[in-house]
Image (cartoon, rainbow, N blue to C red; front, side, top):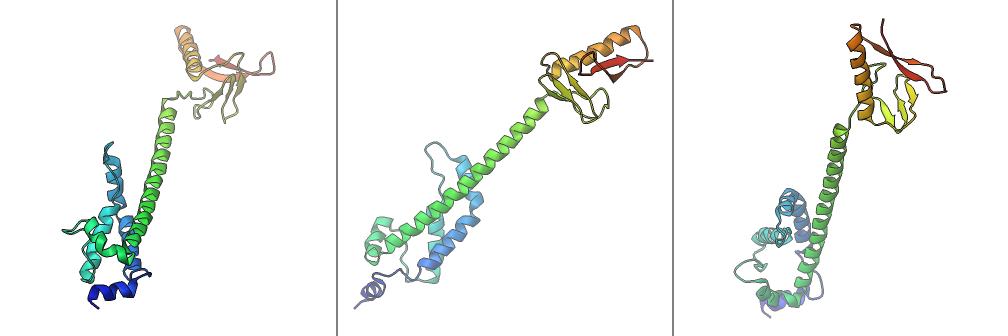
Length: 211
């Protein structure tokens, strides 16, 4: 019985002895190649593939083969079809396919995690930009906090609470405050101040006055 027949007889129907070591090393290399995978994913073209599974398997098989010269060369001069003729009787092609599927699953998980993080970052940046673009009106009473303007309700943590007769936007409110100060300065050199005055109805009014 030659070496191939002894090998075939020994491992027929059972997983090859290199399976677990090869699988573990491929998984570890794939995880450590996360940056390479994501770079490939970001740079992929519409027709290009972003997978690095075949590369990972080739690199680890070459390393494993260097430790055990009895292993055939899967990515050497011979192509996979030729090697398949040697391995298929040992069920080793099925083992390689099983490992490849597992690596592809890990790869998909890495990409999905990246996409979730990217989506979160984009949503966060959008909210920051939206917040920056939104006009803020400083409270004319405390001169510290931004007013909270919701339809016809204006409030501030300092205690300011005003209900307007119609809906008002931050830019409209800002314009009203600035125009009242400008009108005052046309007639008076004193700096005006704002205060809360009781209104004829339940809601108080914002009053501008000076000495």
